[in-house]
Length: 254
Image (cartoon, rainbow, N blue to C red; front, side, top):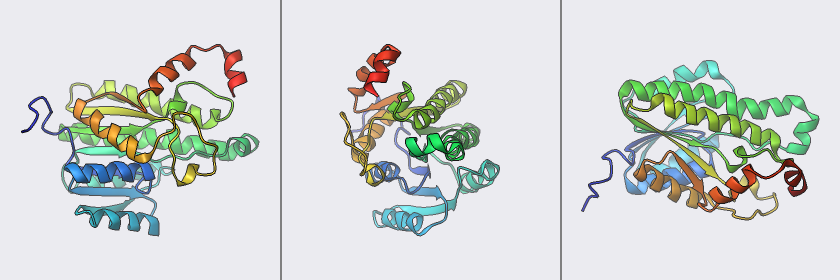
């Protein structure tokens, strides 16, 4: 029996993924395909990896397509996303692109630090505004933004990455306020350390999670129409404590 409390469009039939080769995004997409999603657009730089990701989703029964998208080229975002929305309504946009950078290296190379910020924040602002406007025009849809627990408090070990995610997080919250009442639902997802191929060489962290756990949390958040989702949930309490910790203590924690 269908839960009468669940909005009829809580889970999408059509999905646009910005950052189509992201392990976390693909885990979320696979879970949504298993539930309801039938059409998927994977947006990213043209590559064999992007095509293979689309093929893996077709094997699950989805109509998976690719579209060229470059976070570092804001001037192309209107055309790239417009191509997708021109094909029909998009029930959900998942903003999942981003780079971790290398803190020690990036501190010595400002150009690389700027590229991290331009990808994670500037590119996201551009794509987010384009996607938000398109969703508003069609009168419905969800915009899900993969932020990070690193956005909550500056840390010596990753303040370049963390500052870019902090900007993204505040932007997404503001966009959610701007779109409130338009039929568009904005949800910010804040995972902690996620074990993926690109984090495999980094030391393990407490409260580490997996792409599949993030996918489960995103599905639950969509069903509940949540505005903020922490993964794992206990991270909310940890972040709250760190937010109010003295800076001297934060320096010792690294």
